[in-house]
Length: 241
Image (cartoon, rainbow, N blue to C red):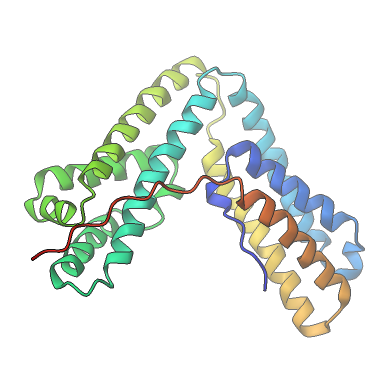
């Protein structure tokens, strides 16, 4: 069974290095004979584009702070959703209802919000927080699941990110139009295409080379996934008498 890399959770430097490691593993094999040469070349082209922006962005002192702030709000939005999904299975009807309310609220502004571009994610989180603060049903649902503090963390993390983002953009006005988060999307597509085709070839031909490739990829996936911080657990809501 192949292990899935948490690509959207890797920091930019880790993401780029992961792609490089993937290319290195594949290039040790006869890619033309395995009919994978074009797919690996596509990832190499993605790496070139990512490097161009990463080098420029890395020259700015606020880049690391921005990445940390982005990860902070990602943790908050993913954490809230994870808690709500879990409580959908509660034996208590009021808790199940609250969980469904929160998930419906978040889905209204998009799924996979943590993978959005910087501005789109900021706007989505701003809208989510506004509903939690102004829509009584959403406020009550957050209180029921005991995640009001987490909603506040989401708000503060988003504000912090936006402040750093504005300062950083002023400092690097000549930065290319595309940012790293946007460039990661086609790179992930190239990676997934390569892995899917490798798995498909293995299932059809049963060649050991494909199995060896997938095993080696699994090894580095485990290493990189281990570097992803785990969301902080929240205290579950108290039982209602």
